[in-house]
Length: 250
Image (cartoon, rainbow, N blue to C red; front, side, top):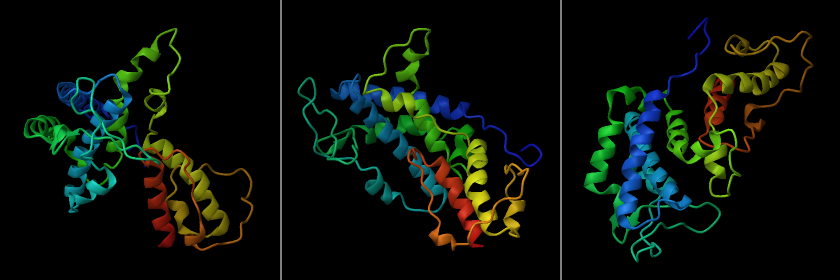
């Protein structure tokens, strides 16, 4: 914090963990016969990494990890891979949810692979990332996991972005201090226009003072306010919006 404002977070430990876990998972997939060049294979590896990180977050909050099987399921029915072995499955639309399993054995959840992931994710440098307040870690973990796939686009003459790499190339997560600036000057400003005497103004540290009085807005209950994030990603905006809405209720 600096004068009450948040400084950019150092995510170097998360980046290192994401790349090390990627190497472990991609090698496990390669050994199982999946094509490491396929986007579905990388999505499968990312799914296991996010599950492993999310399970730590859930335990740190006293919650059960069973919900992961609903939110990030690992399917048992797989297509045949390149060498006649198990490949990577995707469920029906609207959203693909890949996995790393083969028959009843889940490659990414084998004892050896889980042990390798634990060795990385249980590093003391990452301890705070799994605790309450570190919810953004999932977004950064996924972004850094994709980093090797988009390295080719950093040259002076980058190639055309293919459909398979479009998600990795465009999924860049927003730092919390920028999110707060945007949310407080939209949702927060709207609330002050509806409630000029609200004590919430003392909470909006990133609110840009208006040169002119804000035009009044007809007050509405908090439950009637709708917030749209058309590209929510890891919900970095949603987390800040939720906290602000809670304070509006109070």
